[in-house]
Image 1 (cartoon, rainbow, N blue to C red):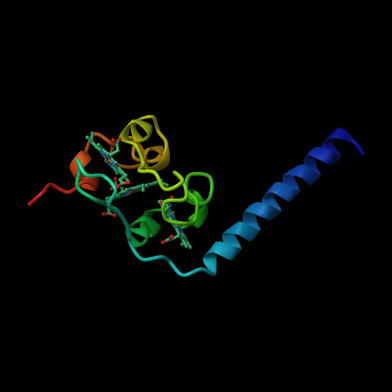
Image 2 (tube, rainbow, N blue to C red):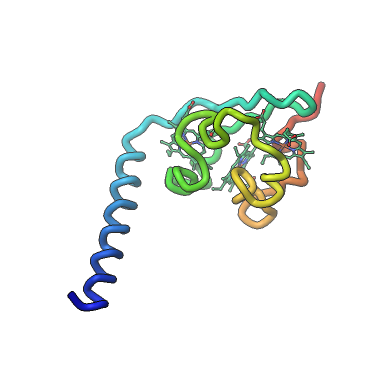
Length: 114
Ligand code: HEC
Ligand code: HEC
Ligand code: HEC
């Protein structure tokens, strides 16, 4: 098998896996809002699939490279740390002031206490 044939087969396999993930995810219902309530020194964070889907129509924008498909699974039940967000992980992969508002706009995710 030539080098380019092997490369082509590998590329086709990657494409097939990606397309089947896109198809499988498109058959799933969009989950209810996810509430992160572990943090005591900040207000709870709500993640809305509905508002995000409007901006990121493909589930693969987040699943499963950035987030597992189960609440809390990505960080194995531990809270998401703000230092990781500022370093570009999890929500910070997009909330970096380029794709979406930056992590420094705390109140957009942690609403001010009333
Ligand atoms: C902008 C990012 C993003 C996009 C796009 C996205 N999700 Fe999610 N999804 C998340 C996050 C964050 C979680 C929670 C992960 C965690 O807490 O570790 C999650 C969790 C889930 C869960 C588990 C819910 C639960 O309560 O345990 C399902 C099911 C899911 N997503 C399906 C989808 C489907 C179907 C799509 C496409 C229509 C989609 N997601 C698109 C970010 C996203
Ligand atoms: C894009 C949304 C988002 C923004 C913006 C954001 N956070 Fe968070 N933050 C989260 C999420 C999600 C968690 C996890 C909450 C949980 O598990 O209860 C979290 C957790 C935290 C925690 C607890 C974990 C830790 O690191 O000690 C603190 C403190 C915190 N954030 C402070 C801040 C501050 C201060 C800012 C502004 C500089 C900020 N956050 C901006 C989403 C955000
Ligand atoms: C794949 C990229 C992506 C990821 C990952 C992502 N977001 Fe967003 N988010 C966006 C975009 C794009 C917008 C809309 C543009 C804007 O408001 O700057 C948005 C808007 C929001 C908003 C305002 C609209 C609303 O839903 O109320 C909040 C709050 C928010 N994101 C929180 C989060 C939290 C919390 C996480 C992590 C659990 C997260 N986002 C992960 C792309 C992303």
